Length: 176
Image (cartoon, rainbow, N blue to C red):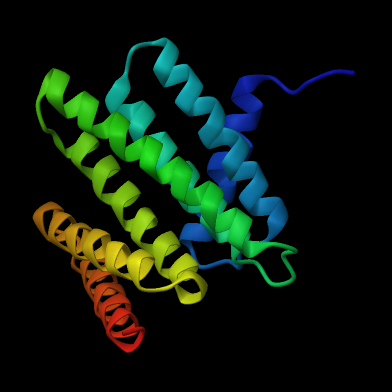
């Protein structure tokens, strides 16, 4: 069995990410191509000691895992959201370590904010069935992501994260 070279996997994944960024629909094939590329990039950055970039790739990987879980017809979206939450938590922790080692910069801050946003979105989805504790956690993470996006000058994602935080707070209040 032959395997594709790393550069080919990364190019295919970047093309898939570009298509998603242009608003093309998320498909399992597109998401898997992008997921393979982010996994490979994270490993390459890790091997090169580039924690900032590794954290960024892992944060994007977490986003892709969540998007895959949310595709229509998925057998167990809860398992997908749990896997995405785990991946986002790993990315956030690595971004924090990178910031502690080399100082806060736009790369590790962005990785942390994206990972925190993903943690919040996954916790929100999981909290819909598991209850108040997960929803409260989601509200906190999404509020933190909103503040981070604002610091980075990304108003659109900040507004979306803020709305997610309000939704999580409302659902948590209703769970009482």
